[in-house]
Image 1 (cartoon, rainbow, N blue to C red):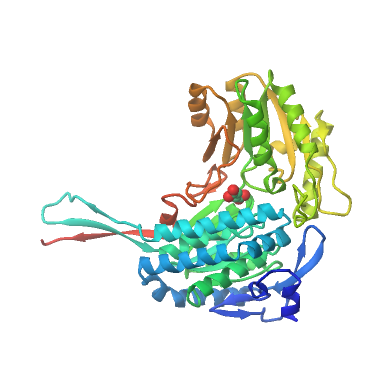
Image 2: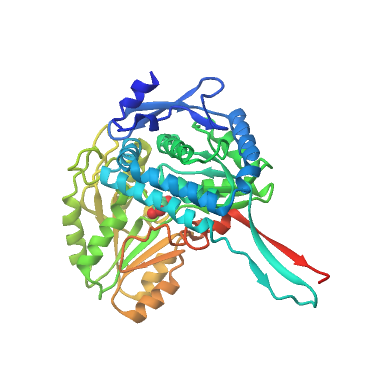
Length: 492
Ligand code: SIN
């Protein structure tokens, strides 16, 4: 049954499809046999099922990770490097399958699905290479005959909770760092896209990651209890999460009960600013990538597009023309440029944002409607969106570009910063002085100047304000999974 279900995914290696969770190296069902039905958002048809696990399975997974920690944490950095590089090679080898899997469960186009696999595997490669560079320090002592040494040690068991918008990359961004540091893990993937997580666990095992180092607990209805246990268990030493700001706050509160380390990558409400001296062609192309990547379902998507009044009409018409040429459809169809949203709650939110903005005076330049009884939403450009529109308070997380006119640099910086969150910000200008001023003044963790795409494994990804805590990737990403320990040698 499982093998015929797996072959329906159309993968070259159907054994990458797992319909069970992973605890202590064993593929297992929920104790009560309950299941989650996973659907392809393009068709709303069932793709397959995974177990609806609960507290008991979570406790077992945490215990398995704790049991595996002493051996894994004392492997050499070079051994962990080699295993991670094998996993990276396997992700390359299964590139087509992993890309297809992402498309099937998330809906993004196959080009984007494969692109995500490239992005996802780059975290494994990056952290493999970081594993061998977790240098400590020797600090000159304040006292005679004393020497100070700082070493870095893995924190212990890590709880990993991830979203559906990047079914693979949001896992490897955390898992790669955790494994490289010598930590063991319990992963809770989202119920919408568990198959990529399970396939990654399978490839990690093929690469030589020992039993219990990676455990995967799938859950939907029991998510509150599972999440609570993953945050509150005294065995767990770190919680890492990507998702919404309200959930990030909830998890941080739970993790605080045992003062765990936390990394939280939460919501954004990114401004995209086009100044009057911008190269308009490049700004339009970047706005498209930035706003409509994943059909607008990324935390770093532009939520507001502020355009200087002197170039507003030109920018708006060129953007609308390009967006009108998009083709929405099943991501597996080669002619599709943009896939569906994840589910009907997502299309309802976009509809609510458009209706609200239009009722307050915005105009629809292109798109504006859901394709009835589907998860497809017409890519939309709204002009003259008023500042009291709902979009101002909530991330749309959908294919809606909201255009606003501005006149001065000070005015647009105030508008861009008038939000509780601050993940990414983008602007286009060829004035070097302005580039420095605006980059420094935007209240975000990541600024993109004259580009619409920032995401890479090599950068410190993360936000300020209510967009989260900590940084993922980059030269210091692995430090989030390690404790510094001071050793003072006296009596020399
Ligand atoms: C996210 O949407 O949370 C991550 C986006 C990215 O890594 O580019």
